[in-house]
Image 1: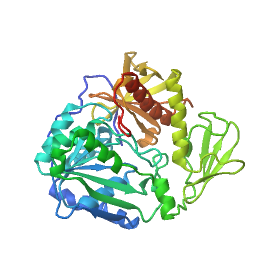
Image 2 (image 1 turned 30 degrees about the vertical axis):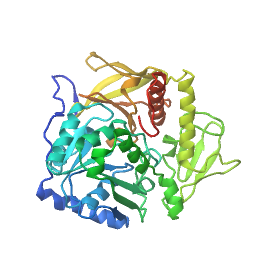
Image 3 (image 1 turned 90 degrees about the vertical axis):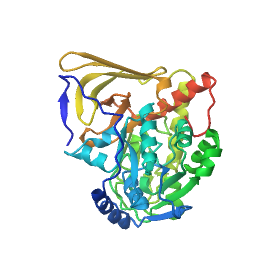
Image 4 (image 1 turned 30 degrees about the horizontal axis):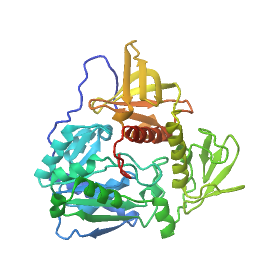
Length: 430
């Protein structure tokens, strides 16, 4: 369980300069035991393309849909040594979790921050001859489709000077979507370990060419995959939680009035309902089905947020929030306050229980995306925003506190800023 403390003394922050550790030999059997039986249960098929004799070092870029990603990855690259770039909040948990995570080769980073230490640490991983595993989407995909990738990714791969390999998984979102992570027991999931850019190519290709290859390789849609493969999801509560990402009714246009239970999604404002089939498709129980494909509904919401941004109207309103802080691997109660997300970014202020003020600003240019958690330990739904030294988590009971809209708006505000600044935008990159 996380440790909670009220800030009363000087904080010790996470050491972002720590030397990466190669996985300890005695932990490798444990990693195998935690991975192989689960992949067998899901009948996961792992295909390897162009990987004959390739052990490392190389940069391994992985898509991200569920915790199950890590278990399949472990099996795919076992027993080769690897380091994993992971979020610092992954080190929070049972006593000894930080020690264990570090000993298996994890390198802690704060999400959606520009950390120059990460380049040095990544280079050290490569110099040790290890595989450098990166999840560049930096959060679980909200609807099983590709999230935006950082434009710096190609430059980083170029700097490493080793092959670039991709590890793409299909079916993990269908089995346990981030909006309701209950295991649905999906069988027949797939993964592909593929040599994307050879060592010779990484030296000759431009950063733009490297980015182009990565973006092309990262195109996926789990719901389209499910339909194509004809894979049934018999889980009775398969739609429960879906309103967390499909927060706006396409029939009446109302936001934050959606609910879900069992296999049904409902708008509490106009009463319209949609049933989610065993093949992941939506069907209106009455009248026109606006979107049968879940990612299409999600992109419609994005388009609506984009319109708000382009018309200079986006504003979340003043929201009451409770704030937690994660300076290291212990969660601290910071206090209560308010949060506003508007055309200028995120603005937070509040008071600690001792009456000490706290505040944080995240201007639009500083965040191309943000991280959201629909079920972070016992805290539930959280928005988290990081600086180099700290991560703040925000929770609220206000229905306008919509994680999916925060995520969409952060991205659209950033894209709009870049366009207005005349900066080059490439599809799929931020």
